[in-house]
Image (cartoon, rainbow, N blue to C red):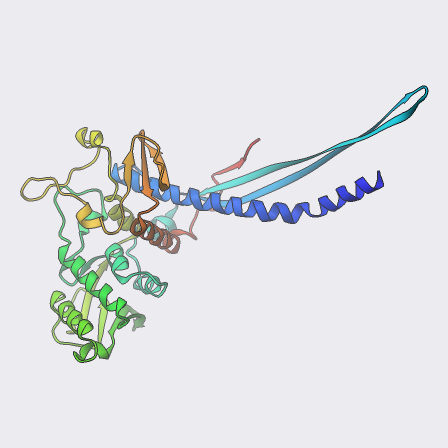
Length: 359
């Protein structure tokens, strides 16, 4: 009896660490998955011009209750040795409590609607993201080149201008891949700016012919006067210097709207006019894959998809990102980081809802 008690006690001593090891990973996966699902859901909502709404898991608490029972029995019969028995049971009950908070209020709305700071652009670049992907998401104009500025809101009726901007973004991506491009943030006299540096070797045809040719194409596309080592990216609307690149950044909501055009809605919803159809000047339907196809693709299916890395069910349809679509997964991950940088720390002070799960 004593031996059984000691074994039982030793098992209880290891219960806490073992439970923590398994449950922490489970909660981590659950919170990460639901955050991604919420972001995807709001992209789909924006496609349908429905109101987006964000909630944050403020806290997850879990209480474990350990209960034990024990019993002993004996049977005595005349002329037979006594029969003795020991029994017991061990039960572990988990009582998780999840607290949700709405992302709302003046501060949240202001951060969602404000243009992305240039410092955030630089931070994303030095986090390892492709400059092409960053610029296509975050900028809606560079000098006179437009990156579908109308896409920063509900789906426009007229096809956007974007081709030249994408060309410039790809040229910058080529320079980044050649390791001759660098971005650095500066605040000069209270004016934020990004210094875009192209290594001097890129200007020497003998050393880096590809980088040299790419730089020349970039200068021509941006209509820059002269060849410089550094170019200044600024919010200024006036062109004061020949090496100045004037930009307009999207807001977080603008980025969400921009990527919502990657949602492929069921054909019956198109026919019923539930989403806006964008038309070319010729009157033909414009395909938004021309703008977002290389960045993100959110597919739809009436049946639950089998190879989805992320999916939500909305308006009777499954919307999802295919697990093998690495470009879409990368863009969605970048969007998640931008969301966290812009709005992740701002929330209402009062919890909206606290749920004791499973009770």
